[in-house]
Amino acid sequence: MLPLAERLRPKTLDEYVGQTHLVGAGSVLRRSLDAGRLPSLILWGPPGVGKTSLAHLMAKQLERHFFELSAISAGVKDVRESIESARKQRFFNTPAPVLFIDEIHRFSKSQQDALLGAVERGTVVLIGATTENPSFEVIPALLSRCQVYILEPLSGEQLVAMVDEALRRDEFLRKLNVEVRAYEALIRVSGGDARKLYNALELVAEEAHATQVPVDDDLVQRVIQNNLARYDKTGEQHFDIISAFIKSIRGSDPNAALYWLARMLAGGEDIKFIARRLVISSSEDIGMANPNALLLATTTMQAVQMVGMPEARIILSQCVVYLATSPKSNASYSAINEAMGFVHQTGDLPVPLHLRNAPTKLMKDIGYGADYAYSHAQAGNFSQQAYAPGEAQAQTFYKPGNNPAEATLLERLKNWWPKKY
Image (cartoon, rainbow, N blue to C red):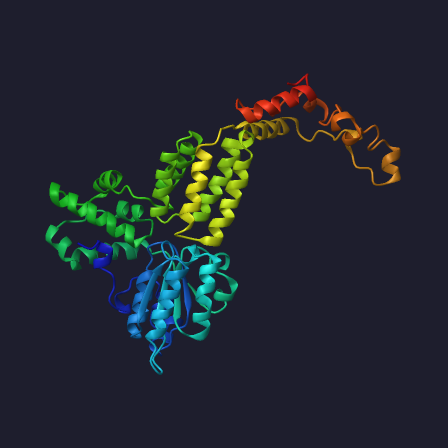
């Protein structure tokens, strides 16, 4: 059986809930549709507010062929094949088919470039859906050829009406014959997302029917806590899973780390967010034990932005395995935290005179730069002079970790600074 959200997908614009500023009577977009016009456009709004449904309804009202791609799984080849299929649908003066790209912000520059020519020539009318600001996620050349429409979160009143309508219209829910006595928990768990609301309603209605109790807030909280365990990139589980992911890398378990990576990718997590966390982990958890980890993580961040999904999953996998199997050290992380704590306690200690810049004669006359020993002019390119101010001279913030790479650094530091190391 189809999910409730699919079973109740609106068939006409009059059945569509919300976004009256766009499709209500007399609105700009509605007037355009009523006149038979459909420009290329970007629908920008939070999850579950009807972007996909609106795209389908606009194409249906204007009787346009409809092609759909998901940026999570489609590559450049898929884009070109869809454009070619759309081109073959054009006969004489027939209107251009609609090409709908869900989560268009996940498309790389090369994938977006592949769309540009077809949009310019009018081969397709592009409708992109995004939860991210298109100013940052859509290339300027493509954005300039599209109108941007902002979709608003669904209100509590609209969500309540959707629950009542679902219980009235859906054949399966009608057979359950459940009574809803409280809506607050249902609305809260939905977070304004109609899809989450319908998922929760189905689960709760089945439980209410099985136990012969009405739907109230207590039932919703109990059922949702036990059953709605799916990845939500804006909710609590988002933070739980990224936490488990990073801790698996820190714990040197590549298999667990790959599992959590797969969970995030399957749930539609932003690959740039994952890559940013890998960059942080490479320095926080590996650091000087393997400095190349930061280089690989940074390159990974650049590569996933160039390639996009689905191929980016391979690049992310390589980086995750590399980081998880690298030696670990949080010495640099601990060092900067300790140094910042010391600065917070001691305030702005003055820069020693011999380290100050002296661009003018006056500065030189009052001692700026005096007695500074240029390290490269000393034996071994090292000068054992004071580089920190006052009481900071006695501090040892960086303490090398217990790993081969930092063991070598420790020997070097002992030779340079025997009183500290």
